[in-house]
Amino acid sequence: MIKLILNRLLVAIPTLLLVSLMVFTLQKILPGDPVLALAGEERDPVVLSYLRQKYHLDDPLPVQYLAWLTQVVQGDLGKSLRTDLPVTTLIGQKLPVTIQLATMAMILAMIIGIPMGILAAVKKGGGFEFAANVTALSGMSIPGFWLGILLIMLVSVQWRLLPASGFVPPGQDLGLSIKTMIMPAFVLSTAIAAYLMRHTRSAMLEALSADYVRTARAKGVAPLTVVLKHALRNALMPIVTLVTLLLGELLAGAVLTEQVFTIPGFGKLMVDAVFNRDYAVVQGVVLCVAVGFIALNLLADILYAVINPKLRQA
Image (tube, rainbow, N blue to C red):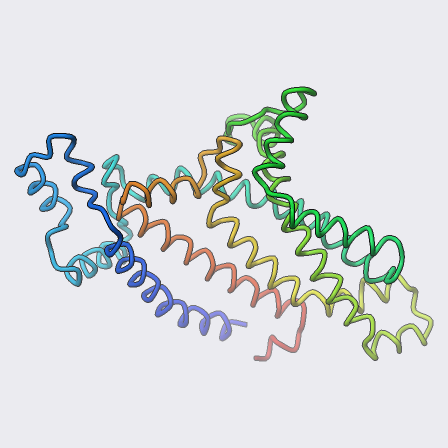
């Protein structure tokens, strides 16, 4: 297990370097100049020159990249060109919001999608499988922003059950924080639950047709034990992979959902930084997302070893 973790960490280092180089290079070739926006309407040449020197924008690209990378290694992601706040401060403010939203959405999706997938596989060819497939296709087809607006109109405006928008930190009021996050989490979970249901169903159908399941049934093992202990355990590998990938996508930012429900999350920070050509924020956010994906993939590898003891020897 330790060898597996060390190997993954060694692979992560060149991956992060490549990601940092790509995002640094690609954003530099985008049209526009952030200094012109910072200088105001008059765009005094003296001010422009001062700003370029202050943020080292007049240095050659390799020099800029090495200077930024040196700061990153030291834990400094730089300062925002727009607000002059440290990027780490901005990420620290926005990332917990999206983590809470993504976690709640993933929990809801797993509660809905995985049991539906198991039942659809067990009751193959029946009415439940048909209903589950229709529900899954609906979940993948309905636009999230439309579903969010519909929920606000019904649940918040007409029924007055939940807050329509906003965000309350859990430390301030845990109950109200959960209430404000339930609807956006449900909106995000619909498509994810659909993907989980279909992948769980496929994995379970394959597992239920395996020889070891037929042997267990022939020995008189209880049907519930066959499904949950024998089939599900072996079907979990692709499900774990999908969950980690989808959670990574959620952490990267659910921009439309955050916009509809006025949630100050990670996705909105990233979009605003791109439009404002806030180089330091874009670089810091993308690097943070890359680290998140690598951490989630490492978590998936560890879960593989927990599920399948044979992999612990690898």
